[in-house]
Length: 158
Length: 316
Image 1: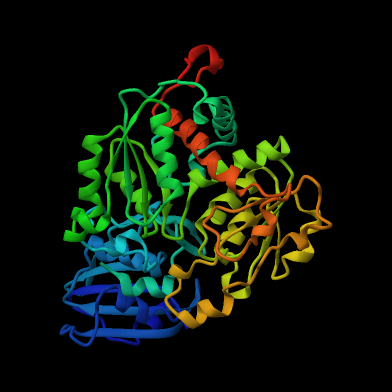
Image 2: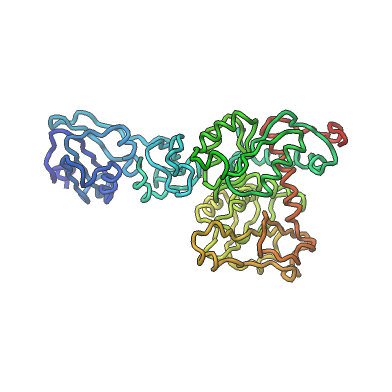
């Protein structure tokens, strides 16, 4: 099945954001990272496990009437660093946003180690996770040195 | 260098240079010679957790070199109990002192303090994280006994999970190509991320629960206390408390030059019968905390230790 067919599983959106090429099975984690939950009022379409030439299988999310911010893109970089993000305005792609996972993730998520000094949220220095490896993704807290549990990290979005 | 947070802040060459400085400072540490290299400098001792040896040896080291010390005192009577952040505490002490020695219950606190401060931070232990000044005195003690660091067979035994001294020491020993044996109860094994980290740096590691059968080939047996304060569950602690009780009778077939070390305080893991054997080094090791920290204070404050200490120093 072509990419176009995959995209057509849900209707085109007038305005909003399309996140394509999410690794298979990660769409729900992406929603968590973006803070999209049952309190979200805008329409959200989600397609999982669709065939992809490039990835074998992939997930897709469409969020209507909402454009992702840079800080949301930074969060996305932690779970879907190769995803394609398109901002849709009046049914056309107005902007393609680049997800860029740098050498360090600053003030996006908090260290997953419960005894890390940064778990005191009154401490004012930035939360810093160093990118040790991109594939597979491995992050290490700048302060305590702990390798991050990526499943737990989703719960620590700032 | 700014401070000493983990052993990664020192190259092998710097480690050897600091150990050489420490060697020359021995008569000053023993009080046989007066050498006020750090006169006019002030050390801030910030111990947010109980400490006897580390705090006292930092204080002694500074004073033996003619410097002065200000103490945070009891945490319960400081601003910390009022909710002051570590950042704010460091901002204040940074203004009062030239260098800070710190122990804190939370991991990463030393790096956090270094990022908050202009003066160098000496990490005196951060949670179950690192304790590099202890490692320097441990390396000093090992080199004193064996005349070298390279290629020794070292057993680290006891609480390898929470014991920050063994975390820092194992990294340093790997850099000197030592063969490592980790002896611990299953519950207190060296964290797997540390083991894989060491292995990725070429470490040769054997993990076992059987300490005694491994001792005959060893050059160093480094015992640690099972730390009750690190357990939230009393039952879990009870399962592993007293896992190893090294007695003089266990030493019949060990190498003549093998040394037994312990960061102290000990509970039951080394029986007093070991104290009078040729192998016991833990009290010398505790003394070496002074001389190793003297050398580190000089290094971090940019003060050169004279090659001829006797010529530079005076009688007390």
